[in-house]
Amino acid sequence: MKFGGALDVVGIATESGIDRGRRSEDALYFDARQWSAQDEELARSYQRDLGILVAERSFSKHVEEYPVENPTASSRRRLPKNPRNKPCPCGSGRKYKQCHGS
Image (cartoon, rainbow, N blue to C red):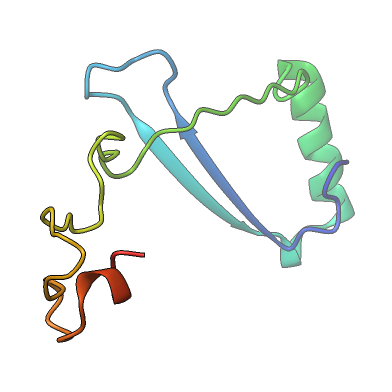
């Protein structure tokens, strides 16, 4: 058994291949602290007889939770073109060439 010592088991299942916005989603929690050897044998017989979870399959898919910013747009504030000897637009009082113009 892959995780035979697990005491808390969480299962999550969804219908695959259905992207129409309507699909079932199931969640399960199992507390294995009261699991006995007899329960283990019964579960193994169900697995064997019904073919449940005999061929492990896994897959993954990455989905962005939030919209990705336009890669051409800069997240920094763009400073207006400023000749080097004028005051810096950031308000520091220094010349642009000594502040943000370097």
